[in-house]
Image 1 (cartoon, rainbow, N blue to C red):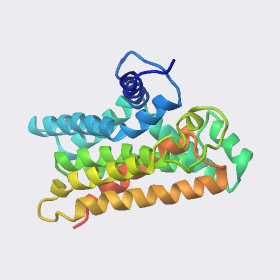
Image 2 (image 1 turned 90 degrees about the vertical axis):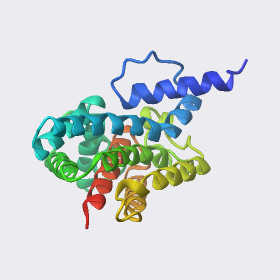
Image 3 (image 1 turned 180 degrees about the vertical axis):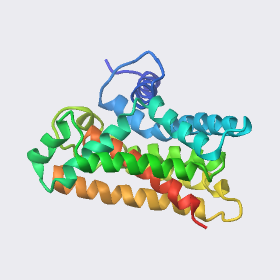
Length: 252
């Protein structure tokens, strides 16, 4: 007996929320069909995160908080609302790829509980750049950056990208999202980015395109060195896309 499409969609949305946020949503079935929905709707979760963080940032600024303080709190809140999983994945991925090892040896580095020097530098610079960028941007660019970060998950989980391990989060979500879904989501986010900088309407979509291009290159490199994606690689994709979107939106 097969599940109804509505039930599968609901399970996928729950999986997306419980995986990508700290919200205490009651979980549903966890399997590849649910994972396909979860990774397809990941940009919507990013949209909700972005709206929450943008509201926090604007509230702090309205209360008289200095720009850098408000930005730092916003970035810290973003990490807390996602359990810091994406930052952890970034550190582990950079450590593994920076080791110049491949295959099982590189995957073993990713599994270690400690963070190496490459990972420390990646964490510090990412948080610093994100906070510095947020301090100069309005609320909608913040929303677009966090939405694009989760759009990277849809791209990373598109069909054709293999998992690096036979089990784990990467194996469950790898190759679950059809390419048309990725293209539709990318088009929607790109269009939503047009008003991010009203005086330069082309820069928002360009920021999204640059972020996705960088994620595409990271995925190619990870596939070549690791054999595919892991949960850590997915986290790295999120942080890379978010950071590059913010950087591009600050350029004048």
